[in-house]
Image 1 (cartoon, one colour):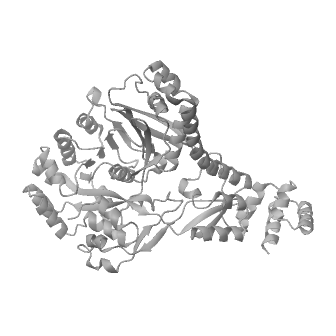
Image 2: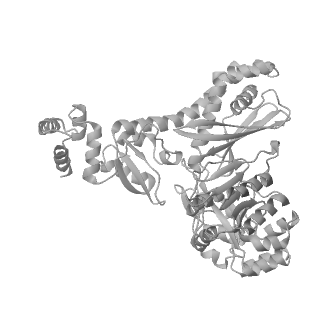
Length: 569
């Protein structure tokens, strides 16, 4: 019997004496209580000792769960607070989408395992920790969730009642603005909103003034979602509070301003970039959340797979040439570049970047921000970088002929160069470079790989349901995949884990254009975009639309999502 084995192991390990165990067994026989609870309540053994004994006996991990430990939103959303408290357990991240680990006080409790399995439909792995630490994590995470939601609304309700229109009378006075910006309700509102943004994995917070009201929206997985807004009377003070944090001029409300600040959340530092811009009814403020914990630095996790992943790694290993990432703002180009840099960095290599601005810091990579106000633009930074004996250089963006030409000449002199370019697809990059004044022979001689990229929202695994698309949707897919009518399609119906959006997280789709001798010759001869694209497809290039619909076929995303992010040839 497992309880006998537990008792024997505790004695053998010296964590409890034989007399103490006999006393506990006598109480158990009299009361029917759980033996481990008796040992702890009677102070015959510590919860730490019992947890370690469980780990040794069942060959499962023991987790310390220190003060800085914090569950992510998608973890504690998997099971209700009532279940976590009833069985004294917490869920950890899903592994490969088919299993989760639950950290338990009592890993022998099969009722707890069965309950979690029925709620999540995942295979269950066990780990063990002490009751005190598990309950502390439950209090920290689940209470924080309720606290944020209710507190935002409380601040709004109280301020709307107490401040009224009297607050507006002071808004023209900078001194009064400064006073109100440091009021407890304003400080709490900004702090709570930052907490909610990080917890939800938001990339941006938008504060937008209207004539009689204002709105606050979070961008999560590429889409904006409204949250509880403050009263209009509180809005100027909130903007001023954000400006103070960002070290921006609170007296200047006529010109666009930029700033940044950092704050600590759940033991990690989060960087925030702030932009303000005057509107008709006040200043609009956008805060970009740069959370290093959310940065994905694995190419396979981003969306690279199969031959494309293999070939990308091979090209990154080459000593020279240019690799370009193309796509609109917010398509994940920078993340892909950072993932490539993470592969490139090594004690044997000097890897240097020039960025506007440096969004995330990567150990082992030398990162330099541009400073246009003092004449330090991309081209000027690049000139100095090339005197620093780099092996690989990452340029945040090619914006002009000067930067592009220096990058290409750097490639010709034995450097690997990575950068981004704003074009709609991979093949139009060549005409874009011609437009900014780059000679075709330079482009043909240096370009090795161009990747067009977009982000598609993934179907929420918790509410993923099979469905039948209508003829209008299938009409988009069948020209590329005539057999699409026989595929199985899925969408998300909405649940608490995805906030009823039906989608959770994003994955990149790609158009992977390797510059082969055929393409190189077309570039040198200044072929038009359509000819270039046709030849690339004939050579085996998978278009963005094909890559997106292949992910639809695998049940990762929906037809409508694929259509919304890529152009159809």
